[in-house]
Length: 176
Image 1 (cartoon, rainbow, N blue to C red):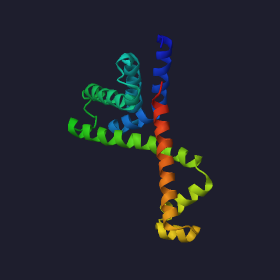
Image 2: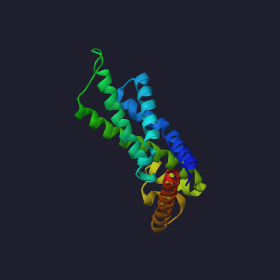
Image 3: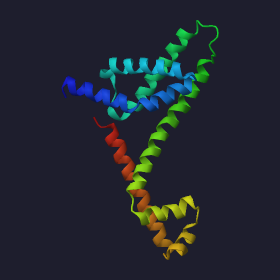
Image 4: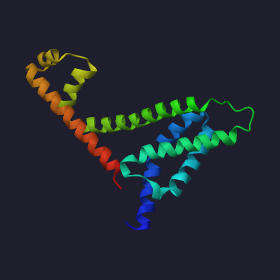
């Protein structure tokens, strides 16, 4: 890849993650203006360190790690202000870990929603009965006129299709 393509790739990846990075940073600084300032510093650092990106699949985790260090740097600068609410680094690290986990769960939930929309109506209805309505497989079978084995097999195939769909989305999201 040439340098121009590499630059476009990093810009695309950074841009795709703005909302998630902002949410992550906000959960650590608890102030919208401060979160925006840290996000801008994070973007600059990601741009400057683009040659250090481990691999495409790890970009989200790497971006969060960069954001975490930018939050630490921000806190150090802000520590001079006596009115700043502060908490210790151990608590910040725990909050960062929890925020990072939920951040990517949101992304997976969006991918799941897209994959659910791609299913046929009968497949979505079967999932609706089993999971949204919390019916047992036996109850779903009675409601749909299928045997327990047929319902189980159909649900297995639907879950497999959803997993494959989400996996493809993750791979395509990570691909340059």
